Image (cartoon, rainbow, N blue to C red; front, top):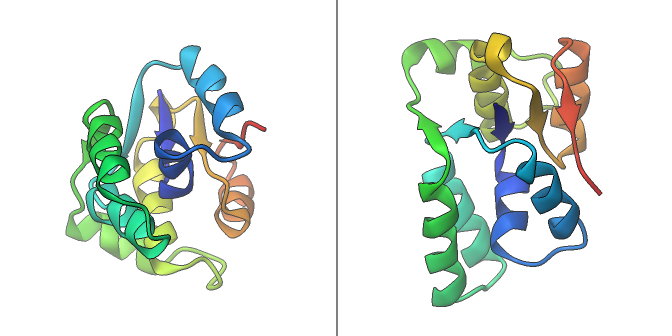
Length: 130
């Protein structure tokens, strides 16, 4: 199973330089998971970048194929303690969720450098297919 953060999920919705490599990587990893946070974070990222209804519809399709883990107090407490403090709040929630699943994860897929560094420091396998 692979964990996809929002930076990876957006690349499955809109064409970015890494999108093809990510799709190829995911062919080998059909079991995908993310935080339920993605239900808000991905559409907001698309709106912020001024993408329209077609991309928002595509986001719903992408998210429907990902198992979403609910955010609970335990995840929030773990996210609050994430080091280093430069990891942004939403990324810390993704990281805490991935850590809770670590025994079943082949990789945390992220294109966020701060999150990748923090995950590597915690010995969580990280992938950013390019």
